[in-house]
Structure formats: C-alpha cells, structure tokens
Amino acid sequence: MKKLVILIAVACSLGLLLASAAPAAAATREEALSAAQERLARLFDSEETRELFALFDKMKDVGLSWNEDLLTPLKNLVGCKSLEQLHVLWGIGAMNHSYAMLFDKVDENFLETGREIDRRIGFPRAKIREESKAFAEKREGQAASSIDMVLAMLELAKTDDIVLNTLVGGFYGSTLEIFYLLSSLGLASGVTDEFTAFVNGHLPQLELAQEMLEAYSENEELAKMLDTDGKKAVIDSIFAIISGEMGKLTEDDLKEILTIVKSVRDPLVAPCQ
Image (cartoon, rainbow, N blue to C red):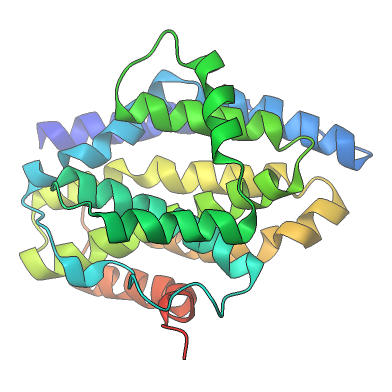
C-alpha cells in the first residue's frame, strides 16, 4: 500500500505540472511547432518524468517476467507498412528494446529490425544522438538518456517533418506498447496490489501522450498530418479505464485495455505476405 501511495503521488504531481502548462494558440505552423517544443520540453525535462521513465525498470519487482511471444516479429515486418505505420512501429520497437534490455535479451536481429525501420523512415539517428548531448551533461542512466533523446527530437522537430512524425507516432506507439505489455503480463501473473500500483504509476505516460497530441493539434495542418485526433481518442479511452479504477484494476479492465491496444497494434505487427 505504501508503494501505491507513492506512485499515485508521483502521478498527481505530474498531473499538476501538466495542468500548469497552458496551451499556446499559434496562428502559423512555425509558431505552433515552437510553442509545442517549449511546452513539451518543460514537461519532459522534469523530475516527475524522470521518475516515470525509471519506473519501467522496476517491472521485475512486481513479479512481471520475460515473454518473448509478446514482442513484435523480427522478420517480414517492415516492407509492406506505410510511413505512418512505421512511425508508430518505431515507438513499439523502442519499448520492446527497453523490455528486452531489462531481461538481457537483446540480440542482433532485434537491433537490425530497428535499423531497417530507421532507414525506411529516414530517421537521422546520428544527428539526434549528437543533438541529445547538449541535454545530457547533468544526468545519468537509461531514463535520463531517453529524456535527452526526446528533448533533442522536440528541438529538431521544429524544422524537420521526419523527426516530427517519428516523435509523435513513436511516443504514441511506445505508450500503447507499455500498456500492451503490462496488461498481457498482468493477466498472466495475476492482478496483485503491487501490480495495480505499478500500472497506476504509469498513468502519467498517458497524460504526456495526451499533452503531446494536444500541443501539435494547435495548428490544423499539423493536426491533420499527425492524426492527433485519432491517436488521442485511443489514448483517452485507455486513460479513462485506468483513472476510473485507480487502485482497483481488475482482469476485465486489463482485457478491455488489451482490446483497445490490439485494435491499433495488430495490423502494425502483422507479417508482410
């Protein structure tokens, strides 16, 4: 119960931070991009977000285990997918990579699939890595590295549509994948108080996704390009289940979350014929 109280407190703290970030009305595409970068950088470069990103590494502590069957397939995955699908797959793959790293299960085939997606979408990983060094001096660890990468992408997304599409689609995909993994593993291991607290602790991930989609919907052209309304409807439906059942998630709730996520995920991870 103590863990539950701490995690809910973290969620509430980030919720207050999110609420304080008033949306900036932008008349032009350029103004909307600059306003979104400023708004989102404030949220991601915060102690609450660092705690959120580090929380995933505590998966083992709540009895969740490795299940290779939950990962995306490594063969015949990319060739038939649209760019929009690949942007979301990029985020799904990033979360799969974090899950595999946690259990020391990353292999070369896994990494090559990620590189293939990078090539298909034209993602400038080397440039992002170089840019992220500007944010990395004061932090250490995997969670900090992930935040530095997001901050670098936010900056470059102001002038690079490839980075912008990958950022928004990728964060959406990684958010869906977190709740796909948690729901699947929770149904397999049982819905304990510790597990419920762990899921509740990830509620700010959904809030960040909502904020990102809202920030880029301030401009009609950007909203259409990024499908912010469609993505937000999915995120909002998951948020409603977890926030409505805070502290008392059931197996039926997890099944409902899985149904929502799989409606988006299944076509993305289907092997190409």
